[in-house]
Amino acid sequence: MDFKKSSWWIVDEKEITSNADNPHSPLSDEQRRDALPLLSLAFGWGFLVTGLLTGGALGKGMSFYPDLLIASFAGNFMNFVIGALVGYIGYKTACNSGLLYRFTYGNLGAYIPILCIALLTIGWQGIVVGAFGFTWAQSFDSPTFYAVAIFAGLLYTATTYLGVSALEKVSMPSVILLILVGIYATWLNVDKVGGWDNFIAMSAQKAALAPITMTEAINLVVGSWIVGAIVMAEYTRFAKKAWVALAIPFVVLIISQWFLQIIGSMGGIASDTYEFTTYMLQQGYISGGIALIAMSLALWTTGDTNLYLPVVQTSSVFRKPQKLMTLVCGLLGTILGLGVYQYFLDWIGLLASLVPPLIGPVIIDFYLINKRQYKADDLPRLAKWNPIAAIAYLIGAGVGYAASQGLAIPGLTWIFPSLLGLLVSMVAYWLLFYGARLGGKTYGVMGLNQESK
Image (cartoon, rainbow, N blue to C red; front, side):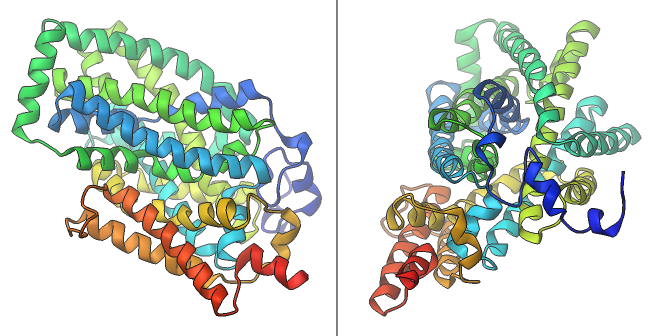
């Protein structure tokens, strides 16, 4: 390997044009991938341990049927709608998030959303690293936890270093094995308490001890995967057909995550833990061993896909080699993994408030203002800043965060905070854009096209 400065610290323009997952420019038609590998990767990405964690949290405060199932589906459906909207943009433009945000926020203004998302996805990487350590150590305090977590972080970094093709090789085996173990874990939890009727009764009893509202539950589910929804373009840009771009978020959110949240909630209700490896280990070495292998493979796939996200984003924004940013983001995620996993619920609560408004201006700009017309040739000629996009985001994030902290918004208390923040950012961008237009100023791609006339 050549470690000369010209290739290690600076992008090699000839190399990136042939790179299968080039983060620095829109993909060519030849770089797009077939449906089956992409959908199998979506299954693997969707089987993120956060589904188990979120389900366990829901099971502690909601009756399983029908409240928990409704809250889980509603939150995942919202994330799916956002992911589908973003995913279609990625398919249509063949651009990753680092490029997409430039269309709306400007070439320098894109640093705001991309750095924010990159930091959050590195945090997610840390959660997966910590989850791997806990799976094998079953505690956060033992030397085993730290040793295994560090090993996991280095493993994810090494395999992500090889590129998107390496992710596909471990995704399908992990999904198949985890589905089988998940089905067995579901039967085990129901059987453990004496059948379905007893399980439902136990669920209602536990929920009454520390109830959570439907709004809080939906917000929790949204927060658990909203980052993945708004960076869906990272994967849908590889799609050759629109239906594949829409199927990817459907597989991730409506199938994979809902399945895992149900398993996690049932474990929390019947076994007092969403960590199904914990109660599977109690069944003996064979069941416990299979569960450990299944979870390890799933976490490996998840760790690679999670690390891939900030790598693509930071490589695009800073225009640095992808392999360099893989090492940087991978090591940061490994360090975070030694402590962030314990604060999972606090983390996703913050994400639910601050992340959805980032994509609001992009959705309005692409679909309503520019009528689904973004062209790669426009990117170099865009202005450095689009101030109204940044202002719209700050307004939406502020409202969403205030609502999440219990501040009542008159007339809007029925909307859960994550959706409220997104809608406010969208409305704010729409009003600011046309307000500026009345004043003779047009921003973004629309302004660029008017100047060229």
